Length: 352
Image 1 (cartoon, rainbow, N blue to C red):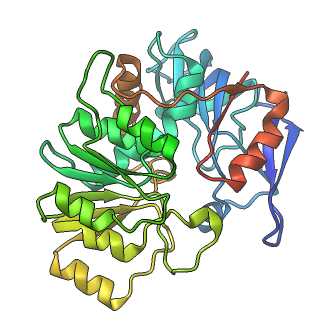
Image 2: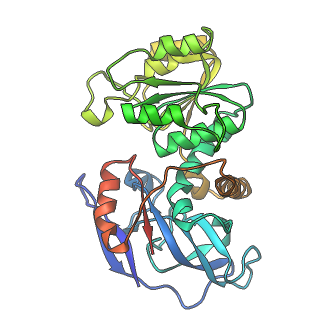
Image 3: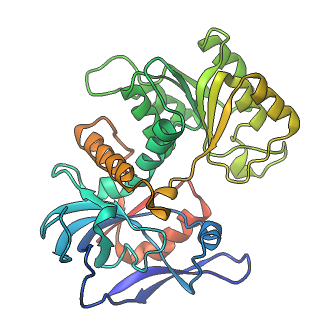
């Protein structure tokens, strides 16, 4: 059977994605489950992270968010049986590509998929759901009455954060990167027939305005927000086109309230002494969002499974309603993956 793999170059050249023949072992190990894949989500490969954790291969499997049907279970598997519908994320060190017809995966990386939830929908949104859950619950410890600022709320990750936070009674502010996104965010509702919008205020940042701080202070009575979640930050003034809407790190620190919490996706964040001084004055904290820790370490396996289960349940009941992704056929996988790798905020899902 065929799978999608990445041939990483020795230099900084763009990685090449190739379809390769691959085989599975004849016998499952004790806790493995053999799954027939129905849909697989594509996310950018973090080659630096793989290198940091010691995973160095000529061919790196691509496509890790999978939804499918159990075909066979290992002798000690207790969670699943054949014909169960399941969903999960393959671990970082997996040798299987999620785009294979059939994959072997440890039962501790899978949860049951609710019947009315489509495989395509859950495979496309699972990673963003996990990231949102990790940012809001694990890092920021959200509670009813908190005020949250989500940068780029129109992205799939931003939308998940907004919906999850509103479900827990949090007041949400967000930024928009285009007029279309602005209109969309103003019209988002918790469910059909509810007039109250999910977002208390949408702040446009696409017309080079520097309104972020005054608007946030106006909305919070001058106190600032309890939590900020970014999707990348701008470290210097002169940045390339793709980063022009990213907030400056000083702006983010300025909008934080006393005891506030900043959850950042920027893995190379550098804080200068004045930034640190301002954080210290506010007794604020910074967390780095890396959802890969759940599968890279087995220290909190139970909590991870609880999170996955909660995400798919909330998606099936309509609490989390991800932006629909159009399923792409398998023969377009290499081209689509190259686009996803170049534009990390783009999402794609392959239907098998």
